Length: 613
Image 1 (cartoon, rainbow, N blue to C red):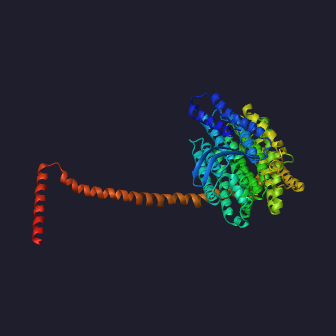
Image 2: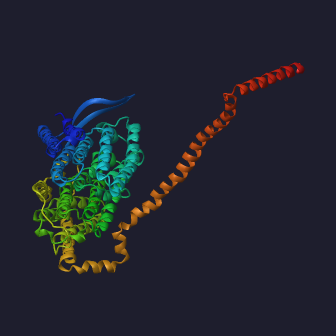
Image 3: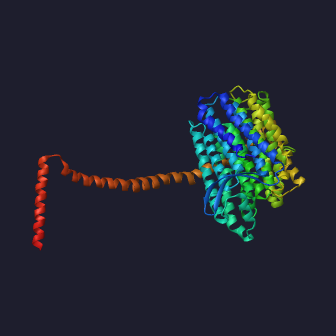
């Protein structure tokens, strides 16, 4: 099947645009960047059609990477049902976002550089998905982190962009450290990193192992997943990642990279399912993140920040799903989320593009008549994320909530409350942007077809994507099904209530929202400022590290110890040299005097030695 061709096409696109793009016209850059992803998508479709139902995992071995004693790590790619879903999401949604980006970035500097980074990201993400062992997955894992850093900081002349890129890179390194420790422990315990061998060996472990090594391994993997998928306490990088161009937010921080943590946990289901402590931890962290981020989304005024916290919240739902053992439901929501969240970000980008860079909701309003396609498609995405009946989010989100109820009813109720808040703040953004009177100063206009075309396709997928029965497709891998139509409809009802409340607050009685904010007082201030978590991290972690680095590492260790030692040796050498150089003055009479003095000293030495004898 030549699986290696799937990631190699985007890699070639990166090399061509990265090396030659400066001298190429934009049409050629587009052909290379978009064509490489289109070829990758086409090869994925060809591969999946050729494999048919995928009853067993298909593996291709290319070469041995590391051979040390009994440890053998190969470069192997594999496809099973889980991989098939991820490949279609990454290449399919990725292609639509690449097409959109060609219009959005039309007038931006560094055009070739942007698409080179975009293609490089696709390469690493596909390596991550296709990898048949943890080390190769980690290569893709680190690669998408690198590309995220490059793309968040794309506007590198702006301080806010470079700061956001650094923040994302550093926070992810914390998570990746946990992941790397887990990899070392897997090697120590199983003697291999191959997925099939590790999972087969884990199945044979006695029950008591789940309270020991498997719990430690999976908790460390969870640290990595929390960093990549922006979960508490490592979620703080993702909202700031909106500093990058909007297509970056859609591709990396909504549809693909941030879901890598969920994918990794689902891929490692054989390990996690034998570690109940870790499973409960995953579920609680996911639910807490979903609720916490949703409350912050209620008060944000930047349209991209609203959707950013929505992403954090929806990733929390996915963690809740896999944490309660509903792996197929978590992956189902991963897929539908890719549809409607990519659409939300691209729609937001179309609004920003039509308003010449404006992102504040307070400077919008009445945009429906100026950009109808954007408004309607964003409405479809808003319905889907709200879990409106028969949209994609209705099927996937409620599959998670029903499974959560079977695990612990209180988790279901917190999830339902979160769903209501989600519907409220997403439609709050829609109503503020598209209804009422225009409050800005730009001249709004609809985006070109190259941008609105992907919006329309994603709108269809957002509405109808739930009818792709992913849980049934994944049944051979994850044998779990939880169905309770009553609970699902209750959750949908709360979502509809959230939509109606948003209509009342921001359409029917517009002054009500301001009155409520004033009445909430300090609570609203707390939520608006995101609970001051960033400030707390700065005060307790960032500033002490910086000050400690200056005082201890720089002034103490570097300047005091290292420089002091080296400079001390140099000073002492100069002192000795300053004495010795007197013997090398270049003066003949001085040399004669030294000879006389030396001779006298030698004679005295001989005389004293003779006298002593």
